[in-house]
Image (cartoon, rainbow, N blue to C red; front, top):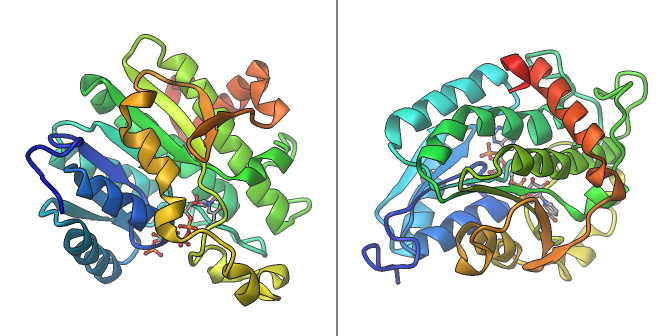
Length: 291
Ligand SMILES: NC(=O)c1ccc[n+]([C@@H]2O[C@H](COP(=O)([O-])OP(=O)(O)OC[C@H]3O[C@@H](n4cnc5c(N)ncnc54)[C@H](OP(=O)(O)O)[C@@H]3O)[C@@H](O)[C@H]2O)c1
């Protein structure tokens, strides 16, 4: 049971995006159980409040906050950031967990391809909007949940939105590689600030992942495959480790799986490409000065 006063995360404030289910909810439970004040986000207030009640019950915490936002919509991400800044005078850890897979091409309210907008641009924008608060709370951490799919990713700068040709898998792989490249560029920009940036593959985990617009190869045989997947609590182990462990204090610009640093896609080490992706992303979300 939690000791909110003396747990290893006591006094820390953490925001976990997408905390209503799956890996995000399990991450929120784990960090709450260590004594952190945890905020979760979700699109639907009822679902988010029910999840917060579960998280509080399972962790023994009385400090679980709910933020409601559709993070595929940039205006909602901006409103969310404003509410977080208003409610949290300090922010010690941001876990960028929201993400998903869509078999077909969908377009967001901002006219952007949904996978790229939600999986990459939303954490890019939210992190940038919360960066000064994270710096003021240093030592602080940004943990972004990517996927092993990053290793198959390719950033198609000529068709980032999959407008010419869309494949759900390629869009997902690209967005998860973008998570890694974003983290490496962020870590470079944050050198000396006391804020670290790491990125993680949680492992293949039994969640609602991909359910909104399922690819045939997910549904086919998936009930059999699901038996061999990690539980949400197991999938949350590495994100929780990166968010909280003293072992990774000061560690930045690294990709992890199973709590161990791993090499990522070769393309992620191309510093020109990471800087280019940052510039293009800043333009797409309307952040000035390549900020
Ligand atoms: N599961 C796996 O095997 C696996 C493997 C590798 C990486 N990952 C990564 O792990 C992360 C979490 O995935 P998961 O498997 O836990 O997925 P999940 O069970 O589908 O949970 C997704 C979470 O994101 C929220 N969400 C979805 N769309 C949103 C939107 N437009 N705006 C705001 N919130 C939104 C959902 O909340 P609401 O529906 O309540 O809004 C939910 O809390 C993702 O980044 C995924 O790419 C998963």
